[in-house]
Image (cartoon, rainbow, N blue to C red; front, side, top):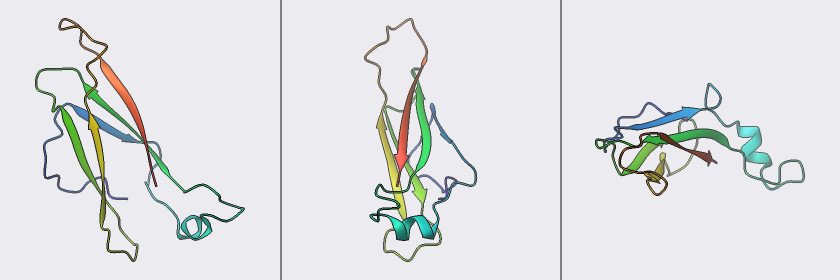
Length: 102
């Protein structure tokens, strides 16, 4: 998975942190998906959070490239809205969100 693609939209105020490097899924895991050995889809955990600030984009739309696969799909997109429901105007803190990417 390529987290360093050129982004079409600004992601100012957002942070994305993969939980392992390199961020990859193996062909073996993809091939075994659905079998008794691997009944759930393989995934890569990425923690995503937005800074509660005036200049933070309200919507994160972050493209992740798919390299090394034979597919018409060449990228996936992480979409998140900034959650400001639990803050006041004078409080600034981070709102973490975890995303499991197949």
